[in-house]
Length: 341
Image 1 (cartoon, rainbow, N blue to C red):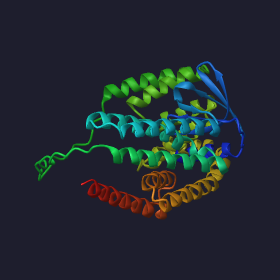
Image 2: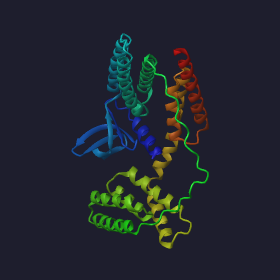
Image 3: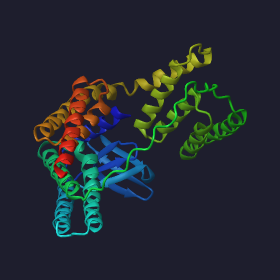
Image 4: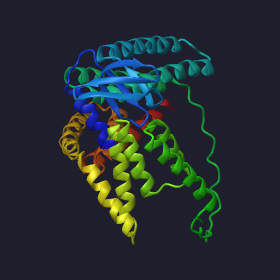
């Protein structure tokens, strides 16, 4: 799914529509384009066509980069006012409460910007990155102004268990399997009647009781019928991965594997685009991370390199720089504690 997220983000980014909105789904997918409300769904028109998404799958919808920056600038101004006021508060509790409010405002706005930054390019991406860095500096300032309490001694370590009992393999719950079969049959009936939303509901209920390769294949068919191509693609891939883990597949499972492999071939063109897009996105994030390291903004650098590793798990350079950022951040916090003493 991570690769799908990056693909949709960057493909839409190429449209360069100044009025485009950024739709962030709960699974992390980002869509960039013109948004049209359609009751319990929205229609997003991107460079590659139209996509309909149910509202219950949406985490947040952000306006264009200009609106994001204006909101972030207002939050930064508000945070600075609270910080200035906190400096005049002598009561430690009241002072910390005021600064905690500032940190909460900053963290929420930074989360929005980090959600949307990789959906923009050029000057927009640069300005958003700069705004993230500015907010992060204010957050560090607010933390440094808090009155720290002496930490209580750590609790005693828990008693060690020399020989923990071995867990027995989970037993198959025949009742759950029966319930799953009932929901599965209801899903098949709904699918054959072209009631795809209802079929999706029944198949998802089936999965909560007993997830099988056969179910995943049907679930992929349902997503495809609902024109939710990215979900269909990922579900077909999960089906193949599940089948590959079976040591001695039956003839029926071998046949299912061939069928799903053919279904997934239609996404091959899209898959090829992902490889090139991932490289471009990783390069962009690595440059941002290097800027953060140069500016000694190790908190933001840590977040950026962690995001790179979500996209490209085997990126050795990002892994090493992430560890370095964490070490420098720990040293920075240690020095700050010494200074406060």
